[in-house]
Image 1: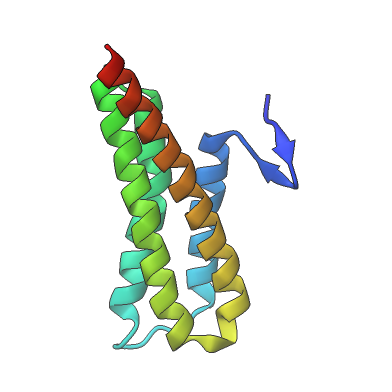
Image 2: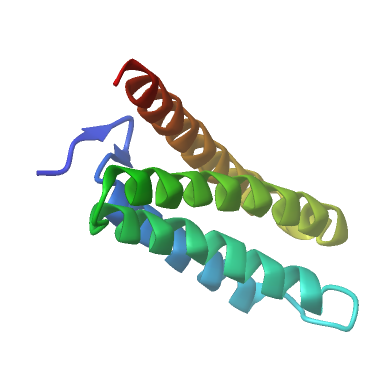
Amino acid sequence: MNEVINNKTYNLEERTAKFSEDILDFIKKLRIDDINKNLVGQLARAATSIGANYYEANASSSKKDFRNKIYISKKEANETKYWLRLLSNYHPEHKEKIMKLWQEAHEFHLIFQKATNTLDNKIKLN
């Protein structure tokens, strides 16, 4: 069952998939030119990789594999924030939407950081 707090869904598989969809929907609204084409491509790859790696983590074959996939999700969330920042400067007309997407990427980064810290602590204890 999904837990909803402050209108946020806390089923991370669903939440990361929804984020990917939101990013792709946002990209469709941008005017693409020679300058931002690479930024948009990088954003699409990083943002959709968050959920893809989280899905893989949940199907992992070992604790080490799980931790590695979570770590990649964390890194991709951080990278997504970078591309959103650059696009925010290039597309000030979309700044409000970009900030909402940036906030969600930031929350993913914090969630996955906490998960990797917890996993690292468990590994040290064992």
